[in-house]
Length: 64
Image (cartoon, rainbow, N blue to C red; front, top):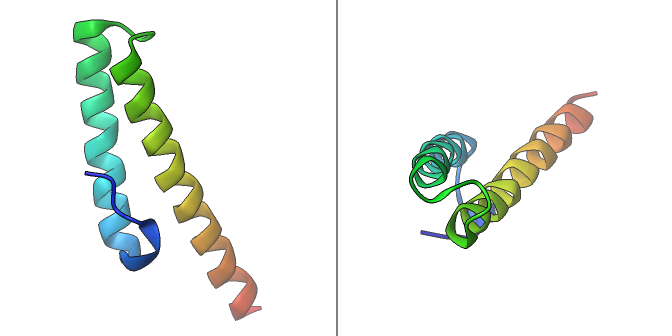
């Protein structure tokens, strides 16, 4: 599931973020918010969210 963010388009990254959010919610509801699997998904989600934000910031700074 974990793919390097750099090779994905912004739209693909957004899709993966959406899927990870849903999966994290489902796992959190079933196993609990402090369960290792929920936390692992959250950490992967953080990587994608950070990458997306950095890429958006790069686009903004390159346009100005």
